[in-house]
Length: 300
Image 1 (cartoon, rainbow, N blue to C red):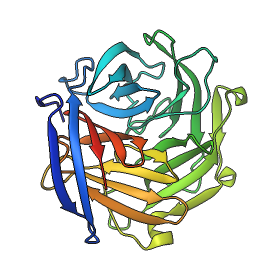
Image 2: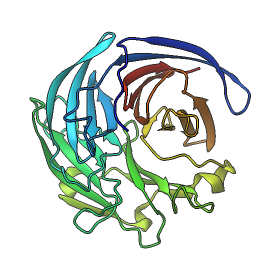
Image 3: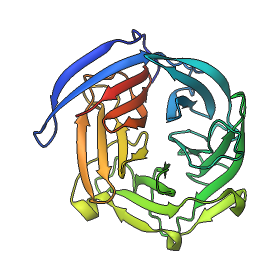
Image 4: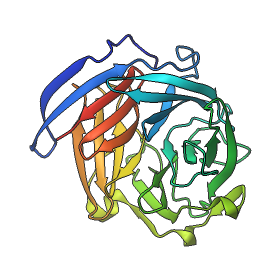
């Protein structure tokens, strides 16, 4: 889906009810339209996004990266480039900053990009690309590729990756089959975050997993969202979904990784466009990337 015109810094406030009947007041503010490359053309839609120390890395399908600097109620573009993993089979569905820098002088840490494409990349499925963004924000280098050895067929389409920065873990999340299958479940698998010293290609095996379960099995919660972005903060996995339409409303699921409980928020009235990824800025403050722009949203 492509961008529509959105007024910069438009403010929307609304009182919403969650699925459980609890009252939540949410406000959403559009910070402006994104400035991706050829973003109105087919195959250049916005996908993954994350924030580090005020810098936003926004990615497009195939692996186009744009770096912005947040400044008050807006942002400015400071760099644009092809990722080292730029490829037609790189959907760049989730972007997640890690905890380590390739060089101490680098302004940004390593970034983990979910390939998450129907097509294979070099014969491999759903790999995680680890990129080093150049200090001048004008290029990026692929420094490591991470593959899950899915010999047990834990995942269908598609596996997404996200870093737990606080605890140094790498999580995989995805469908066990597909959204169109009534038997589909949503699996979470947890690993130690690989070091760069482990080589340019790392294979994670089922026996390496620290946790491996489906949300439905451990909680009884039933849902069937179309997987978009991911972020982990405060021991919780944040999952935006939805196309901003009546059939596919914009919603945010928050999975408590410790207590195995789910919350859901309706974001339809405080965002517009298809939601793509989320970065948690504070306890109740989020940055959401949609096809319409960047939104700063406060949830209750």
